Every structure is written in C-alpha cells, then in structure tokens.
Length: 70
Image (cartoon, rainbow, N blue to C red; front, side, top):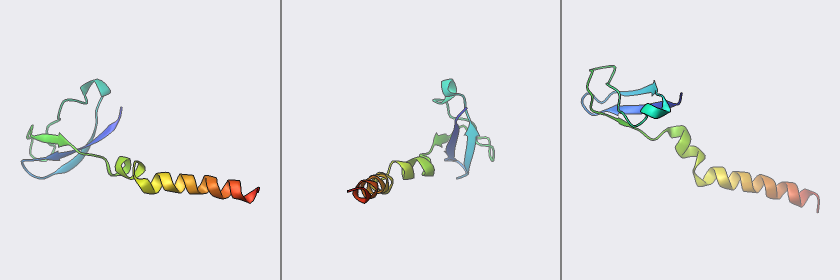
C-alpha cells in the first residue's frame, strides 16, 4: 500500500496515511480534528525525483564515464 500525504483544510494539519490503491481517490478524515475536508499533497520526494537536477546528474555521470575511456 502506498503512503500518501494529506492536508486538512479545517485545522491545517499535515498527515500521512497508507491507502489501498483502489481507495486512493477517497480523502480520509483528519486524525487531528476528524474533518473530511482533506486533500492529497504532492510528495516532496516525488517532486525532487522529477526535477532537472536529478536528470542532469544522471546524464553527467554517464558522460564522465564515457570520456574516461576515450
């Protein structure tokens, strides 16, 4: 089961919850105040992995390996 990050619009609480993939579209209740007004957040880890720094770092390591053998 994936771990999702949520934000409660009622009390401002940020929390994580393991949710089955089949239930990922449903917003869970806030563990702090019990409000159903929660929204899924974009994971910090996922946004860093999709950034340009990650892809350019991978490309530069490949380039340095190739130039070493030339």
